[in-house]
Amino acid sequence: MFEVGDKVVYPHHGAGVVEKKEHREVLGQKREYLTITILYNEMTVMVPAENAEAAGLRPVIDEKTVKEVLAVLKDDGTQMPKNWNRRFKHNRDKIKTGDVFELAEVVRNLSIRDLDKGLSTGEKQMFGRAKKILASELMYACDMEEQEAIDFLENLLENISGDRGEARVNAGGTSDFDEDDDQE
Image (tube, rainbow, N blue to C red; front, side, top):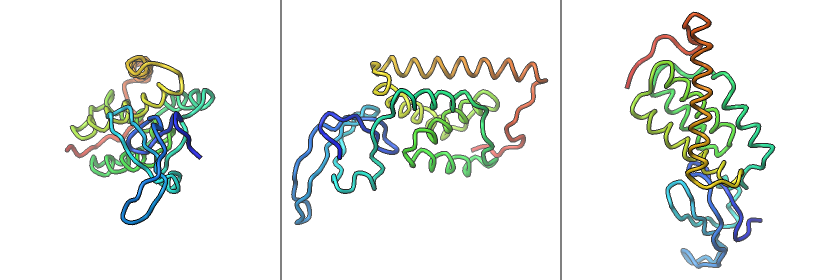
């Protein structure tokens, strides 16, 4: 299904390239493994080829899907749990799915929350990681260099945040996000 040189996404880790396919004996079983180099954290993972889909491995998105992802980033935020640890778990579970739209939603919602109320330490770390994972996929999908993709995403989020800030001021300074909040 996946071949050497394919650009793929491994859930919770980001986009990478299939570097090799090889047969290995592990725990007495001979299986075919895919060796994937993940861009975001320069990690190498080995995935049994027969379990690649079950592990959530998927091809990098195409240009049409990039436009849909950018639309998700520009959408209004969705309601999230008020309690920070429930919100953290909610977002972590979305990232783990490996679905690029869920990831874009997390990036968007954390960006809005950061603008409106600020983020807890854990959410700041999650936001940074989610942006890097999304940028890694955009890099391959849009044929960019790594830093170019990171800058593209950061600039896009800044422009969207600026537009949201203006809209909030024009609407009287209220937010659609939850009012009371437990802090970390």
